Length: 198
Image (cartoon, rainbow, N blue to C red; front, side):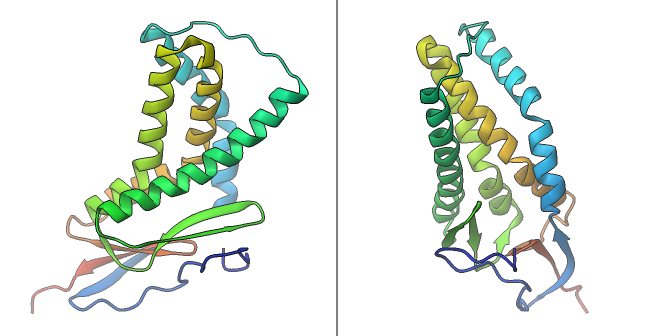
């Protein structure tokens, strides 16, 4: 991300500052190419999974697809909208936990970063908030209002496929020490563990 120039917003730090009473034990780096490819490849699986859940909740069990100029425009709007809402939800979750978010957007990317450390539970909550909130919302709306079920599945699928990086980070966070602190970085995050008692 360090080579990307946002239209507005400050880029995340490239290195973490020192933390009193803690020592950095790892720098987890996110491979954006793998995340993008992985997210794209998982689109059919996310769509099938979401449609199955909607059907299990009493919503439609089949969908009709029509490709028109209008649907293309709506899909583009949905894609951009999902990205924006996804990042806002990261920020809202952080703010509710007492952490100040910083947003940025540029050509082909958007991000939310945090310029202060977070404890494990907080970092997990912030990371998973968009996936959980948007998935639950779109599935519920699809089950309740069949007329918009198709679009809700599309929105849920776009969001879930874009959350692959969040899921990778979640897996790495869960493997970190229990009392670890986390610092958001441009290419991932730094993990700090408490200094050993001497």
